[in-house]
Length: 141
Image 1 (tube, rainbow, N blue to C red):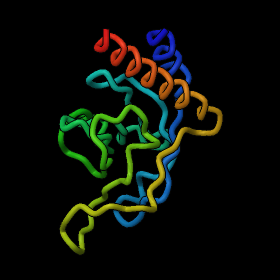
Image 2: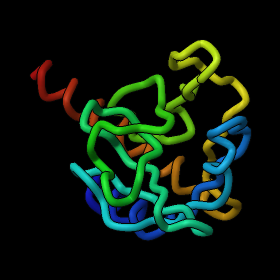
Image 3: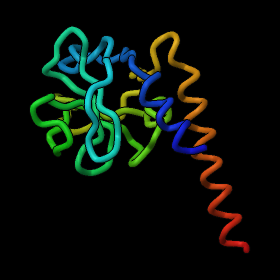
């Protein structure tokens, strides 16, 4: 059951909408489409500029990176949560604040499934919950 749900996620979750980025990170706003993955996680490439990607970085955070260096550690902005399957729950997002010369949480950033892809996240969450329940049951036996 988990494999079928995960395969459904890969096929259905083709578009991500990013909004709320400001300052030097404003160029990251827009639509991202699914591309090849890194470390078992899907990657998304910005539709308007294929040089920008959203993937899991080498530290386990969802991160906006150069497409040429995706999966590495040179991030432009990244999630606060590590190893999170759902992009929608990976925030708040951290962006570079050049005035403070530091990373700062930005509550205005929104990373969501594009219209029509919302159901996919529900399927993925159910699959993760089922896996957790199966693991707990096997430990009790």
